[in-house]
Image (cartoon, rainbow, N blue to C red):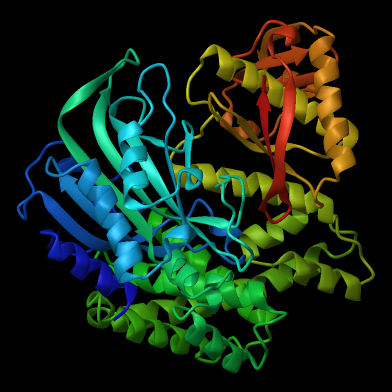
Length: 578
């Protein structure tokens, strides 16, 4: 019996009713392209509507998330995944939820208790420390050293207003090394496998929090991740869920997975997701808008990587992979069989259409290949004709031409950020609010951006940020891991500017005036015609929506806690201020 069946059977034995997976394309919800989590189809019932099957529910839900589409190709990212979930709609609460999670992991899956660790809510000025969750875990057998607390990752909210509550996350130690006595949430050997959310509050417009009349529990366990963890795999694509698909791609391409991991992962993931979108009863077809655009991107990206592996594109390679995926999942999702003909036809039609587009691209290349290829042209060949950069470089080399790779990468990163934000449905400024501490953090991101340009490269740019009351997260383009010396220099430079008590000034101007003034203008499309430019002394000038401190002396001491990869060509710094 596989994990999905064990999970359903266990919670049915605890009085839950199994509900079917909702479609991947949401019904009567135009605000999102796809169902992205198990709880999404249940929002009306979590908000108070009565569910026809009662107050205890369990399911496995088909989910699609495209915000990380460009990150697929590494060991863990997927665009389609399954979420195992169980819910209490005003029925049981923390005690049952936590004890059943523990029982399932240790008794059904036989995970040793010392390989588990948990986080609970640390408490803030509105909601106290979750001592109840802490004590429940302790009494079940989780050691004190394996219980950590945070405010950042242990509070869930539906939005700025509405249902919210504390949560507890469960981690598994995925390593053959000695298990640490103390659980460090920054230690990557600990992998989150389950999240139990306790919706007991409602946040009002003024920020105040009150108790909900009915308490709910919402849990989520990522199927692919947990299977990989249980099988001792650090690469999800070598788990039993994927290995037959990977072996088929090896056979079709006559190449080994080792050395070709990225392309094989992308083909496996994207064809699987395309199959599920095309099999949905919403009858989505590849197109240039909404869900159709996503499925077109997936298929075309898979084709580009098939070409990279030397697969004969006009063969029925995509049909073979789709057939295998349909046979693997049809016991759980009968629409795959019902709509199989539509799926295979759509895949084949889009493949043939894209091949013609590539031919047009070759003709376009011939028209422009009388001089070196600049970054904008190289990106145009990719965006319009599906030319991967490698193909443009290869064709240019034959004509002794150069390609502006750096210019292409910059355009690609801008496109990636716009795509990600479009998928989320709006542009986010990276701020959850505008409290004093968040304002200080936000101004610190400007100094960090400026310091990276001085220490690492003038071509470093912000690619995204996220700020909480506890820390800042800052993504930037960079082709290497920062050395300890670089991190120290960046940190020292930011603190030097803070101590210099630099004034922070604000001006309004047109976009063009901002560009002409030398202001940092990443993703200029997201800004209105009149923009706000913030300057920090002579060290930083950026378009920004704010808020900011008036002088750098208000920020405090800046400290880099972690520097890591965010995605290919993008690094991430996590930092705190004291």
